[in-house]
Length: 585
Image (cartoon, rainbow, N blue to C red; front, side, top):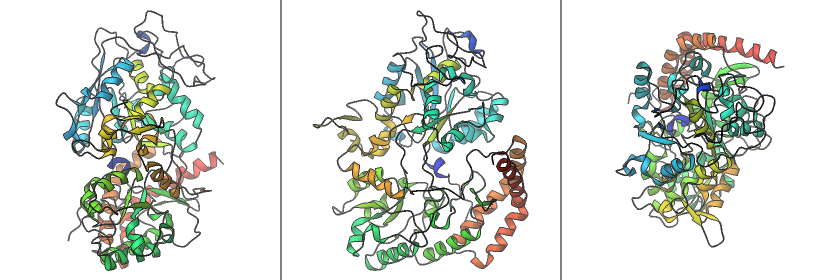
């Protein structure tokens, strides 16, 4: 078998939906200079109370001038909007990719209850344009070439391919910091949570914020490795018995040879679903990033790339041996995500899969075996008590973010619409969706998912249905509560499974500081030489994984990457990292 270049997306890109938009305001003045809209600020707003107070007869009930702020203009408390906060007939189109387009009604995505209620609550008319996930990158390139970027764009910077600062300076995207008078809730939440990983992601650098990021109000690790618990019981094992890689290997071997499980372990096109969640015990990541270079880490002050280190050699040799033994499904190059593995998961053809516990209920419903059970396993280690140092930081971020086009004719309104999702009412509604459709109260007064969601009449799984009938936490930008995903009988037990993935006392010694970034010039240098290196690593690493290349060739493979430009890239990163550490000592 020849291993072709992998075309997969990393998890953050595997499941994330691309939402684009176009703005077609009617009978409203241009707001490329935001001061021309009622209540609008200038590009550099005052740092006190957020601009001019909106007049009582204004069709806009926006936040500027109506909230208490600190010396930087950041709100001191959540801001609750009037409903609706806009009474004009303006339209903002929002380009949306739906993973289950077959369930979109004939009247269009915007005709569904959640989208209709959003328009009523905010007063902002959104025209949804559903675009296939397979073509979103090409569509973005066409719009960029025609200088016709829509207003609100999910993952716009991902497809733009440059930094937030570049995109802002080149006139493509809005610096949301300049419009913080219209985003009190977003900036308040970032300040209130006050976590380096969140703050340093939201702020590209001081005074530059290019995106609204999805934020978790109740963060837990969302993904990890799960196992058929009933199969474990047949072997006389419990999840507590499976701790090390040797334990996992023995488990998989017994699944195959004693229980007849065809392919005990599933991996994806990218191998790992999230970097470091299987390779945790090797303090590295075995995730093939088809969008660029592998993930980086810092060991003893030296920048390294995963998929090229001694740790990577060791875990790759282990996985290649498991693959040779028939423990890993050879269909892996065709699996973008769990959706492509449903048949194996529900028929018992596999038993060890990376998944979100919230998916388990869907799989149980679809599994003919009435005794089928799944449970989570702890992060794998090489030996019990091992300290994990890479990739285990608890994140407050969801997978989605949106950018706002600088060409939008009413930037304050677009910013306000985005900020509403971080307000108390907006966050609650977007997380749960419409009552009676997505959820309702049970006899104990608890919110529970409806039968329509749990047993969709057309067979859509509950977790996919939630992405259509309420906020899509994989693509939309909102202050999101995960509680809805487990709002059914037994759901709390599944939520508790995620606690096994929390690493107590985690310090992240190998994690690259979230505040570290290359300069624009350094980024340009790296971009100019990284494409060939990334392609080379993806293709050759896959060959080791399936046994087409001997592990004896590993050092030659790494040297090949160095010769193609990785050595130069590492030098650029190391120089920048040393300067960063000296500055932040």
